[in-house]
Each structure stands twice: as C-alpha cells, then as structure tokens.
Length: 255
Ligand code: GCO
Picture 1: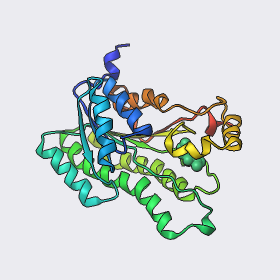
Picture 2: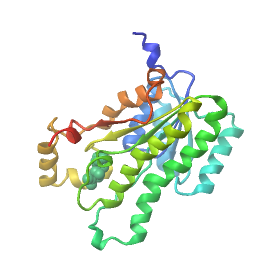
Picture 3: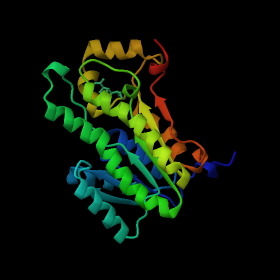
C-alpha cells in the first residue's frame, strides 16, 4: 500500500488547544506527516513556545491565540486566515477543560463553562471551517471525544455530557457535510498521561484503578493518538465518517 495514502503534504491543519497535551502531540504528528500547522491556545506565551518548538523541528507553523469560547474571536481568526490565504483543510477540535465535582455541589456556571469549552466550541469552530470547506469541495474534521463519550464516571458530569455530545455532533456533521466530501470523525482517548490528568496520575489509588480497569494495564501516551489522527486527516479515510475511534487500551470494550 502506498504510504502516499497517509501523506498530509500540501494540507493545512488547524488544531485547537494545541500549545500542550494531546493537542500539541496531535499537531506535531500531523506536521510529521506533511501538514502545515495552525496552532491555537488562549495563552499567547505558551502558544509561542509551542510554535518555536515545532519550528525548531522544521515544521511550518502559524500560531493564532484565541479563546474557542469567544465566537467573535473565532470568526475573526478565520477571517485572518482567509486574508492570509491560509485554507484550513483539516480541523482538529481538541480544546477542552476538565472540572471535577459532584453534581449536587456543581454550580451551573461551572457546568456551562465545561459544556461551552468542550462541546459548543467544536460546533462554532466546525461551522466556520465548514463554511470554507464546502465551496472547496473537501475537508477533514476530527473532534476529540473521550472514553467518557461512552462511559460515565462520578464527579465529571459536564465533561462526560460534553464528550457524549461530541460523539453525536460528529454524526450531525456527517449528516449535513458528508455530501460535500467533508469527513467528520472523532477520537476517544482513554486515560492519557497529560497535565489535565496529573492529579489523577499522582493519586496512588486512582493510578492503580486505571491500570487495573484498562485491559492494556497502563495509562496512554499522547503520542499514541497520532496514528489515528493521521489516518482520519488523510486520504486513507475518505469513505469514513461519523465514527469515533477509541484509543483507550481497550477500556470501553471490556468490563
Ligand atoms: C477523569 C479524566 C477523564 C480523562 C480520560 C478520558 O477525571 O475521569 O479526566 O475524563 O479525560 O482521559 O478521556
């Protein structure tokens, strides 16, 4: 099989929330497969450091600091890309936050913030990207879900609901955009070694639970998402849409 099938040469990928963690790993992997990068985050200094690290590896990187929850900022960012002649071929909706608290103690404003960041932003950024992909006749959208797109855990209700919504938003995008040759799919990471999970990693009983509950017997590494991301971003997946691929060491498949 030709490796060209998985090449992203000549393509531009926008990865939201890519100054660190899963987003940074996915962005680096897409660049290694040939993509030009547009990276994003809310912290300009952290984003510039990420851009410098990626450029040091020879990748072509534009950095756009904006809050995916700020619709006006998202629209302005796409207008800046338009003006610069940068067409987004691949969108990775990765930006997200976690907030752990039992629902009986959860303030509605905290619920809403997680839903807005993890789900609504994927709709808004996806809509702006699709408005440009449709006339060009092609596009790839990769929404970052979670094993919590499928399974619930106590104390992370808004995250779980948002990630469940990501799974169905991916199908809704397919329903409306597959006819325009836009493939929308999702990746469902399992328990990954990221800053967002550091409190869990450092908790000996939670660490033991993850290792016991995960058939692979370990936490996942962010770079272990790259292969699935490149597949879904490439011509190898032109007839795949509406799917969520769990990269979770087998957790959602086994009791
Ligand atoms: C938690 C974790 C999970 C992780 C996991 C699923 O508190 O249970 O933050 O929600 O994000 O990697 O994607």
